[in-house]
Length: 465
Image 1 (tube, rainbow, N blue to C red):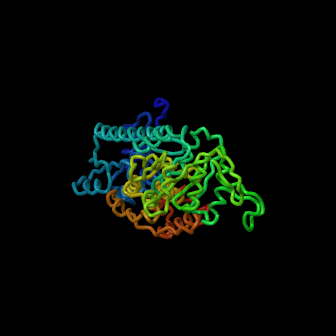
Image 2 (image 1 turned 30 degrees about the vertical axis):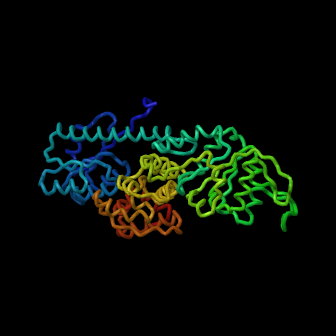
């Protein structure tokens, strides 16, 4: 229910070296649902930003230790979605243009009109609330877009779901086609779960993993003494699936000789074990799947046409991810939630530039590739938000163009060795940041986009000094 959604508190961090200005800001902007943090120290302000992850930052341009533009660069590097308003008594057109180019949302001249400041902040608060509402609705949409373990709201997926519902109660055999990594096994399980055979076994045979000479005995079984090594009777997969469903994955790799015997078994609903002359009746539904072009296989005499027609009485095709890009945000959220729970990590989202990189990728490996990418990113992320450098090396080459658009000045990182464990990788990143910062913990924390407290916790965890 929409009315059950709880509003999320909005946070604002104000950084100004003048305490009276901060007090004025706090009093002027105070309102219900808005938590305001203030500090006169820009380094403490950055720590607050890394720790609290605010939606809005008010920032003085001229401060000791670090200028407002330097802080702005750090904030944009941490999360480009944060709205930053720069304030200064030394207004110049050049500085204003530079601030906007580097990612500032607004640029106000001191002394600031309280009414004008309230108006600007209220506009940003409205934008934040709309984004939060959109995220809440996305969470609800994710729940309503689940179907038998699959996620989708695109027209192609809704059509696939509808066809599965219509077919499941009636099919005896079915063929699922589609590119690799699109979830053909999930479609097969959905057909089984929604069929009258759902109480029976769901038995899987990966045809590409079976040695050609063993295919017949794997599918139909054998009797004792049928060949050397047959010390006892063995039930075949088709007989084992009696009363349920047999899923033949990658059926395009099945030998022609076995295809002929499978066709007879489907037509007669009976199997004959190797070495036996007695057929055995079976009641089994058969679902086949392949990522290959079956018509091309038939043309090249690699697949029996009569078997194709027997299986393809019901044919379902799973769409590639490139054909259903509108499902990408839902899939990203679902997979991030899954891996955050699996790795016990507080990862709650992705930066805009990381989302842009994923949105521009062609996804030749489809859902399986997306799962691999987000699993890697969630494992490698040190902070609570996935950024471009957390993505696999194959995607990070896009960081430069995306980072330039977002005002990113991050130095390129070395590729992650896949053989290195998560703990070793994290320890290496911490040690490298401490070395590059000359042991300055605040600077190291800023490099890693985490708070000093989190840095110190991880230093203690890995015994780093």
